[in-house]
Image (tube, protein in one colour):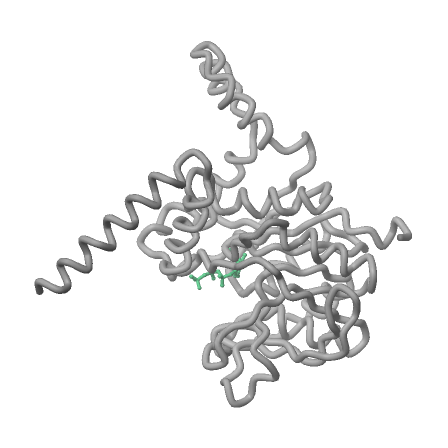
Length: 301
Ligand code: UTP
């Protein structure tokens, strides 16, 4: 692939208010809520790196400095861990530290919507295609969702989205796409609608928060047109871009948890904990015991 079409950079927007998770998110960014023992945003960064991304642009906002600190070095902590002989933890922290200069931060001054957050990254991305990962949409599977999108991108170029199926009555919660002709790693997108009523939804394939987009999206988002919820919606911008450029979709063969919702966050914690070799067995036993005693209480009540 021509180097100018290669996807080198990723945008991770972290500037939202996280209102569904108040009061936890009053002083702490929702992207720093932990899944087992690492913040949810760390999973998105790992997924981007697995897919070959070389530079990450965070779109951040006030009260989110914990995210910058998380991706910075911690020399005092590392030396005290070394002194304590905790070499395993030292290697883990060193493994997670981004290469110097490989992350940038820019600010979205007001949470005007995802489309606006993406537009705020325009100068740092420049005139090249980029990956976009919504960190609160946590992908769980054998292979990262973004790595799969790269396969499809190498086949088709253009713009790529990842999708999953939702229950037909739940389309009004998501961005929904229409399904067109198949290609080897996915299919063409015929339509995109933000939160359609089930009677108007073109399918039950919802956007799960992983995208590869061409830089022309920035010119469209610059118009700052408001959509659903009076926000500047990325889906509306993508729909406009699809009038002149190709969009393809790939069905993610793992599972995405919406960690911006309480239910999705708890479910993700359980799923990731069960999969861990160090604590999975303990967590399994605890859940089983909790369910048994909960059922006994319900029966007695
Ligand atoms: P969400 O819509 O899930 O985030 O956006 P939110 O607005 O923080 O959540 P609620 O509905 O109030 O609970 C998905 C991602 O886009 C970012 C969020 O930080 C999240 O990572 N986002 C959203 C922004 O960066 N800016 C925005 O204006 C909106």
